[in-house]
Length: 224
Image 1: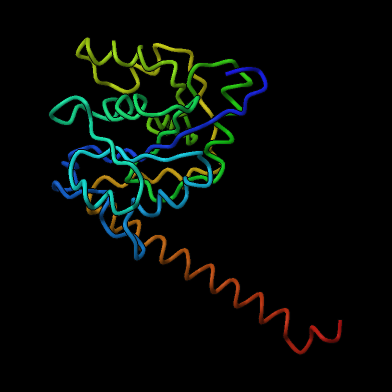
Image 2: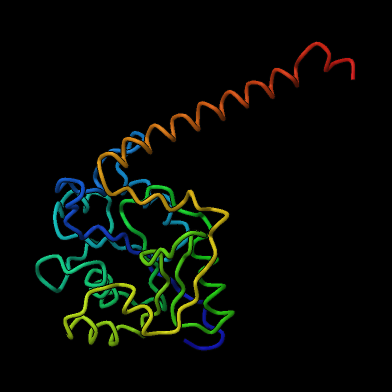
């Protein structure tokens, strides 16, 4: 990449896990607010990336129905998100890979922007989102040049995402003002509670809007 080349970023939906805490159901394909969770994530991340991939190891045809390349892990037996990240890194030509999980249907519209700005400003290798309470390792911006490092890490038998990330210079990027963009639905109970929360939030927002309209068009408003 020359000094004058535009920075390119590929996106990947990480949907290659076994979803054990969801009873084996594929989390990305579960319904959320009328659509699959994966559909919500894809809609939110597409405007932020130059091309897009899906990392999945089961229900391949269902994921192909989204019309984006589906990449399976090069390692057998569900070896974790790093295996999916490596498989996609081996396919892309972009400078960076932006990773997002399939079980987080609300994605910050500034995810790429903030991660990339922090990475370039600090001269770090990898940028990772922090929601103000904890680090979110699967919301990362990773340069393709680290492909060989990740290959060696997995070949050594290691699997933990944080362990590999922090072998490099990492900048933790503050998203505490958008903490609701890191829901992470892992169980059926999480899904049910969050659906109710969103419905309540929308109802309250609608009531607030109605009250604003009433005040604006009240008889007294025409006397101002």
